[in-house]
Structure formats: structure tokens, C-alpha cells
Image (cartoon, rainbow, N blue to C red; front, side, top):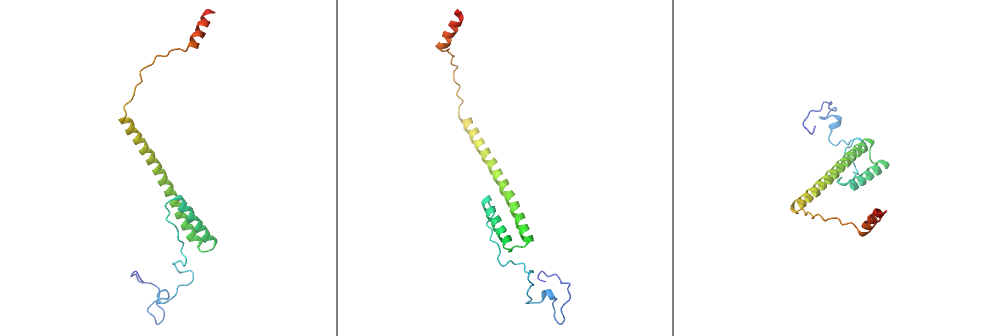
Length: 137
């Protein structure tokens, strides 16, 4: 075997190899692990790329280019990628809020606080007239 382990299958008559390891043997249909037309999925870095990959996988399922097992594995991978992108976006949002908060705190620390002098409240003339009229009654 290629990894150096010994195959425990009996050798064919007159040959040094078993049925599965005979040089030049073509794998039976369905045994080939290499896909003839592999899907070219985009890097799953954002929600848009995940949507494109989902469309490609669903299209391949519909045209019977993917086995049910492969499709399940790819869809599970998309689910994980979607969750990771969502978490990364949330973390970036929190980091941006913290950054803005720190910037405002630095700005407030630098600016002196202006205290306005107390201004006496002077009643309006109409208020004085109404009070005077109320006092006459």
C-alpha cells in the first residue's frame, strides 16, 4: 500500500498484488474519489459569498452532480461559515462601538466644561399683568 502498511487481502493467482492493488486497475464507477467537475466555490468571507456558494451547491444537487452525502457535508460547512461570518460581524460592530465611545471620552476629557452663570428669570410682562389683575379681584 502507498503508506507502507501491509494489505491483508490475498494476492491474485500468479500475481504479487491483490485485486485492489494491481497496477493499472481502473477503479469501478462510483469508487473514484476525485470529482470530474468539482464545484468552484468562492471564499466564504461574507454573506454574499455564502449565498453564491449555496446557489451553486443547490444547482449541483438539482443536476445530480453531487451525491447526497457530499451535498450534506457542503451544506453543513456553509452553515458553519455563515455562523462564523455572523459572529465576526457582531464582534466588529461591538469593537466599532467601543472605539467611538473611547474617542468621545478622550474628546470630553480634553475639553473644559463651561459652566454658565445663573441668569435670573424675569417674568414676562403678560404674567405680571395677569397677576396684578388677579390681585384686584
